[in-house]
Amino acid sequence: MTDESIIVTCPACGTKNRVPVSRLQQGPRCGKCKAPLPVGNGGTVTFTDANFRSQVLSSPLPVLVDCWAPWCGPCRMVGPIVDELAREFAGRALVGKLNVDKNPATAQGYGIQSIPTLLIFKGGELVDRIVGAAPKQQIMARLQRVL
Image (cartoon, rainbow, N blue to C red; front, side, top):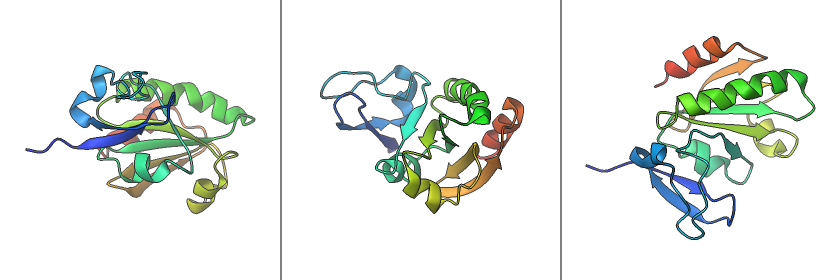
């Protein structure tokens, strides 16, 4: 029996850590500097052009990506909902945010023309897209479909 893992980059030192999915809810720490990793505690992960492939496309868990920008009013409404979903789906789905202003290559690659846009991935494939400020129940229902 093999335990699937995800690669999590430490926000403190940049070290890549292999974290078994079964340990995500235990609050994993970086193997090098011992800083808490941005999963397990139900926190949102910051996705970037640099880590999108390793964090999203290679994840054994379904992934919810909130494509947003700091100047966007509706994005600020959806942001706390995404944070809540990260805590509620910890260990079952990876939830994170992609700042489209700082990461234009990924945003352009997925045709993000309006924000907020929520992307749901499973097995490295885009399986759902929600454009606009959706209520929590709708986002939750769409995410639960892929679990």
